[in-house]
Image 1 (cartoon, one colour):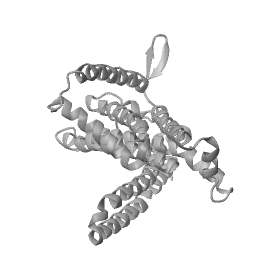
Image 2 (cartoon, rainbow over the protein chains, first blue to last red):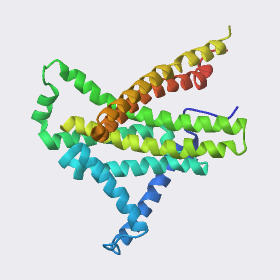
Image 3 (cartoon, rainbow over the protein chains, first blue to last red):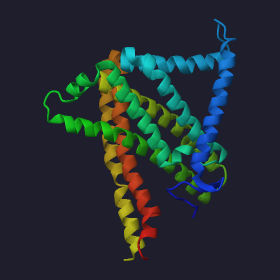
Image 4 (cartoon, chains in turn purple, brown):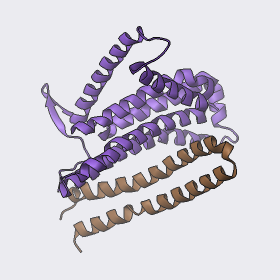
Length: 220
Length: 81
């Protein structure tokens, strides 16, 4: 029976105790910052006819912008960078599983933080679009009675997103551990393509899609 | 019946949410394919709303699975065996 726990592993660091997932989160953040600085250096040498590395970057940025434009219209310029950042972090923090490290998204507090970022994005975009008075008025339409229900629905959204991402990553990890303990040869390599790569891609896409969908619902 | 046995059975019952989610997903996908066949020019809109619905159903299944996992890995430590 493999060692499985819902809570992240604790590690000692500078006379205090933090979760291993927190440390992994810092590592991934540092890595992404370095990556951003490198891209920023390379951006000055970008040409009008893209090739190689520039193609990949332009493809990612443009597809997210186009997708956001289809969902939230003129708010896309405000939302798309946040969504792309969230998606980059989610995929990077989960893909470290490939190296046998504990993914940062296997911690409920990490995914809840990501969900709260989504929640703030939705509300800030809606407030920018309508202003406080009209936002409340829209939430209370058509009858005043629906206001508390709408508020509750909005507040549950980040928790639902957090639980979804957390449970998906956790379950993927548990299934892989179980398979490793039963058949340690060849089979895990094939299945890990699904559970560690395609699964992560789907969850990243789902996170971005849901963020944009909630924003669309709040601003349309 | 031992406590561990009851926990195992309750986890199995919790995982039965998968049945409902699978039925919902199959119905939604079937209807989406039907409507795309009837009106192929609306394929983009249909598939994006299908995606949203599928995510919601998947969440339902994931909740069931999550409860099952909590039952299996957390409950045995909470009760005297």
